[in-house]
Image (tube, rainbow, N blue to C red):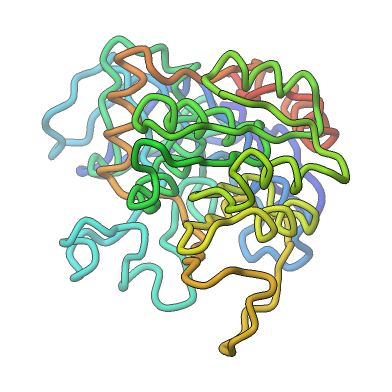
Length: 345
């Protein structure tokens, strides 16, 4: 079969590799679609990434092709989504439903493994998956549903962790209406009564935001922070979701968050700010809670799948043949992909 693999730092290739053999508790999935994420670019450009000759792709959906001897609850041909977080399932955190912070497989400073992030991922014709990490998709198209495994999951987790500030009458700001941001915007529109302000540098992406529930769109310029403050009577937004994470967007987020607000830094752009234990209010007002959400829980995943089944969340998809994977990576890095790029074997 063909698979897109990281063969050296900065180098990916489509290679011929064996179809994976499955264990008794595993399922062989024939991949229908595998989404590209900016974290894949991070892996590509990390000079000391520990796993080389690994198949990339952590947003995967497809159909069951074969079942291990001990697998139950699935049948050949079933459409399925591959859950991103391959946690142990038995530690205290997992039992409490917080598998994205698994103590056994992630630990204090690590992360639980997932497809394409150690184990072979879904940018291939087939992927093997333990049956515990599959979610049924029902009537959803697996090609369009593949990004729900991260763009949907991570957005839902970030929003669920900020719901205490998303009551009716609240204002939420979405910075970056890209692969994650356009899904996060839809989740906010479908599940909250907040007023939604979308911010981006691209007119095309702001037009997408208009179609996905934004009450106000703002093209980024030197006056963006003041515009948001003016829209909130100088008080700031109750929740800010930065789906980019570069320094200018982090600066904007800290400039417009309200006292006691929820600030969620979702993008991995490398921006930051000083956080001091003193009486100074710069750059944050009192009471702001800041989180870097990682992926999401099984509950988050099922919630976003249910929203997709109800037609309340959909992913804007640009498809590429698997053989054109390197071109898709280049387009993503160039910022020319609206919504989510998905590789189709």
